[in-house]
Length: 97
Length: 238
Image: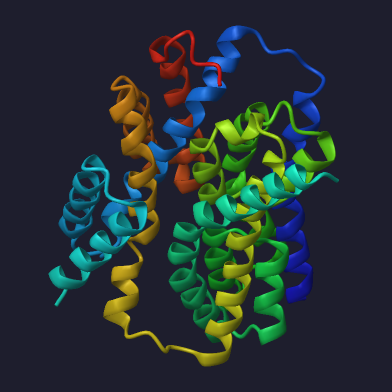
């Protein structure tokens, strides 16, 4: 039974992932669609960051926000992405002590 | 194969490894937590590792394990997974459009491993799509992420709660921080990009309570992308 669920989950996850590979070779998108597709990563990053980040510590949304600001500052000053990640982790850790 | 080809291939693999390492950092604690949760919901080690091998989608696996725990029906779980993961369709469309010069079999294989994280990182490294053996770059990046996910799940199922809860909660911020670390350099290069991301955030924030997490991200991404049509500079083609 659990294996049926797993296989079903795998199929419905797989299909949306792979279909675009077969579309793009056969259609030539107009310029505005190309621009839209180029903007998708920035839009997706926005939607993935917020409001998700405020749920890191469920009852204390502020902690997520503060960690986010720390990450923004680290990234703004061109610190390596690992440093950005570790600083955010350290921030949450300290604030939940 | 010439010496030069060999060299280039090796370089792409090395760069892919480096580009994928922040994902590993973010995945390991989450995969461990998934392994623990899945085991507590009554899944065997084979089943929970198998789910990571076959599904490779963090949020959906947490949800799946949870639903298995309170014995939801298979159909419910599968439909919920589809809804939650449909966002990958939009991301994949953008991803393969970036990979136009890469052959179809490669494009197909790469999209198999598309997640929020592998997509976000790949989309920041655009120039590799036009380089010789660029597919090895993206392939390595995705494979490293995939292996860390599967390995982490297995470890979580084997060892149980080894990470103190306060630490694992702190590590939960890792992927968000990685997303921020990917976004900020692009914003610095072209300030207007922030308008795209903020539009997506607002749309997601407003709609999520009504339509759920999965569709909220889809709607935010689509609408944010539309903002991009007006905002992005014309010459940005590579």
